[in-house]
Image (cartoon, rainbow, N blue to C red; front, top):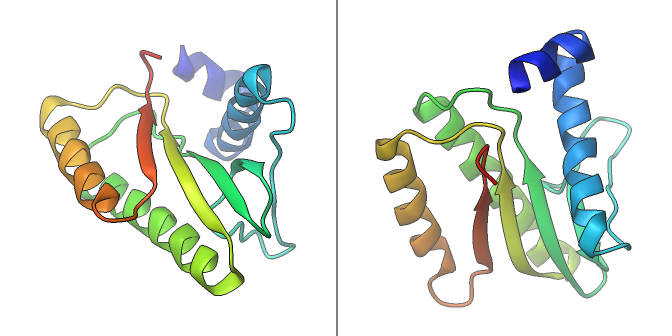
Length: 137
């Protein structure tokens, strides 16, 4: 399905943008106040879609258009995005109560094992609740 998505979008870059819009639209089904942020430089503070207010608390959906999940490259990308939003939350004075990773693929067993362990480590203490929306959701 997402191979066709990429074809219809005209390439991977456009597919990434459309995937993010798709996730925002899906979140809006339940949370009509969901929206996106972006700086002119393309930076988004590790936030693609969020519900809440950046001066208090938010729930974040991070869209990663990974048609396949092969390993360390995707892991590093996820860690960087999560680290950025948590750092921005600390510096800007808002709280992240939930963080959902959205990918169009289904993770191989070893990568799902990595994600489950990473999720558990991030949630320890006062970390936000982490979820995964994958290609089967």
